[in-house]
Structure formats: structure tokens, C-alpha cells
Figure 1 (cartoon, each protein chain N blue to C red):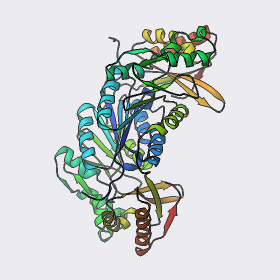
Figure 2: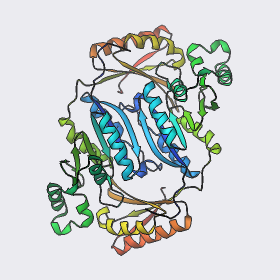
Figure 3: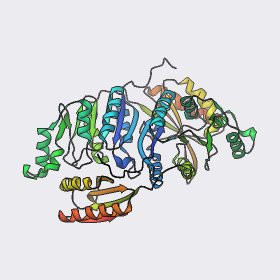
Length: 256
Length: 256
């Protein structure tokens, strides 16, 4: 569709693992956090997947995603209880043994104040697929790990976020993905035709239209994303001019 | 693994469509809402998938999901702008024409106060795959639709929720999935061994362990789900007794 410079070509996916994400109990917030951080270093989040704590599901979907995307991040299922089966399932997906990782074990010994306090359940958290490197967990002791292009995080948002911050400097990305937003007093259906024409002039940018309904009434944000700051500015100006030309008011928004 | 009565066998998946879900801009809340509502009528949410506004992506993933699950719900991409390509993509996935739906057109005429106000962009919202039936949109005019086992909703949560409420009475489910939660003053690694043994006594129930970290400190919820109220009560009593036996305090929680 276009020969213009595209958005960065490095891609990522998130695999959210956990029954609680499919029962209505818990709303995932890790996809949003990981996506934002990756955009800053020029990696595009392309896919999210939410699955149950089941070995066959984890193996199937992890293997599908790690083959297709440059980076895959999993969240959930690395604690000490019976439903924490992510590490074993990932070892099986990679066809490597799950083994007691001495570095992970040492971290648990230190966290719990002695080897005598690392009971069987806690020792489970030191079982890591062979060949994986550990990811620090500054909140509780149980480390995440990194194997091939897969990064395995805890599900608890505070821990997942800390793990993401830890691995971010080690990822190979590209130019940051920049984002600008324009608020419009006009509705989507009034703008749609001109906006479509404008979007065709900017095949190197992603231009999205997002209506919302709040107690204060209807609103519309137009979001422009790309890697070239000058092109972004041009598009923002064109979008504002378009809204004014159609009789509306445009507002530069600070949100991404 | 078990020959006990399983959780209800009817399954569902959600396909979240929209670039804004993959940029960190927007946090999906529709999966949670749809999952909760389905549990009430005995349908298990089994899978969530988040993809970009791209025709090939929508076709591939919709076809994968509608083959595998009893019900598929899509959210997003049914408005009037250039990035609203869900209806066309779904028509292509089903290999049926996208056509002007006269009922949908009439709704737009009524909403906008006359056919002369239904411009080209608004008319796009009346383009519906052949053979689909419409789903009311009480917020804005643009209807959702239902084709085969696929239900196509708007992305705006207020509208998606209203559409879900509209279709719910028409879905074939089973006994409601019940849920009980017990708060534990003990950490996961203290409980893990006994909890695993307990879970083996209840192969007909799903027992999950969910730690959280709040400013007030560490907390743990044990969540028990199933369709048999008596079995659920038994499991709750056993979980409470287990926590007390290990020297902790158990609290019955009102959350699901």
C-alpha cells in the first residue's frame, strides 16, 4: 500500500497467562504498560493474547507467537502454587529441561533468610528452563527469566512493570514511536471523508479516530503516530486545519 | 485428569480489534465485562486476542477463533472512519458480500433526522455482511451485528456493554459459574503445598491463588469457581480450615 518509510519494523507480542483474566475477576494492565515502554524504544506491539493456566494452551500459543514476532512477553503463573505452571510449560515449548537454577535459589535463600526457609513450594520458584537468564524481581523473590526471544514476567502489575523496566535497556529497537493527539469538537461522521483523504497523504503515519462518551458528553480524539517528528507536526497542522475548515474546533491534547 | 462433572462446556473468545489497544493508549475493559456476563449464563470465556485494524489480521484471527469456540465476540472498528474496517473484514472472513442493510440505514435516518443527513461516512455504518442480523446500539446509531457464532460490537465500552446486554438473553449457556473468594493472611509459599493437595480433592472446581501488593501491604485471595453450590461451600470451608490449621486467618471476601 505504501513505499514510504514505515513504522519501526521490530515487533512484539504479549501472552497474558491466567484464568483470572478470563473470568472477569482481573483486568489486565500489563499489555498497556509493555506497549508504551516498547514504543519509546521503537518496537511495535502487534498482538496480545489472553489464555488460561493450562500447559497445552501455553505451549501452543507461546510457540505460535515466538515464531512470528521479534519479542514475546509473557505475564503470570511464575509463583509457588499449583496453578503456577508457566515455567514448566515454557521449558516444554522450548523442549529444554526445567531445572533448579542455583542463582535463583540463592536469591530465595537471601530473601527468606536462610536455606532452611526455602520450602518445597518456594523452591518451585527457582525451577527455571535450562539456558534461561534471570530477570530481577525487586518486589518478591521469584525471578522472571529470558530464553530466546521470550521474556517471562510475573502477573502482578507492580512486579511485571519492574521486570519490564529491567529488560528494556537490553532490547534492540529503533527510532522511538512518537504520538500526537488532537481533540475535535466535530463528530467522526462529519470528519470521516476528509480524514480518510488526509490519511492517504500520510502513508508513513498511523492516523486513528477514537470517540468517547463521558458524563460531560461526546468527544473525539484523533491520534497520529510515526517516527518522523517533522511529518508528525505537518499532520497535526493539517488535521487542525481540516477540523477548522469543517467549522469545528481543534484542541492539541497532551495525551499520547 | 478428571472424570468429575466439568465446568460448563460452552466456550467463548473475544477478539479486540484496534491499534489503540496495542499502543498503550487504551486499556481494554470489554473482555472483563463480557467474561463476567457469560459466566452468569454458564458460558466459559477461554481466550482473548488483541489485534490491529488490519484486514488480513482480522480475517485470520476471526476465522481461527470462530472455528474453535462456540461464541466469538469482536469489539471495535464499526464506526464511520477510514480505520473502521471490521464489517468489511468480517464479510470477507465469512466469504459473503458487504451490503447496504436497509434496517441499519433506517436507524441512521431516524437517528440523524432524515436521509439527507446520512452522508457517505454515515452510510458506511449501514454496510453489513449479507445474512447478518443487527444488534441495537442505544448510544449512537451504528448497529452491531451477529453472523453465525460471531457477535460484532463497538469498541467504546459503554456501547459494547449495552450490546452485550442485548444479546445475552439469546445465547445458549448452561448452569451459572459460581465464584467464592477467601482472603488469607498467609503468603502463597506457606499455603502452596496444602492448597495443591486440597485442589486435587476438588477436580470439579477451579482453585486459583492471586497475590496482590497494595500500599497497605501484601495480600492473597484464593478464588474457587464451579457450578455446584454445595461443592463450592465445602471447598470454601476446607480452604478456611487449611489456613487456620497453618496458623493464619481466613476471611470470606465478597468479590467474585
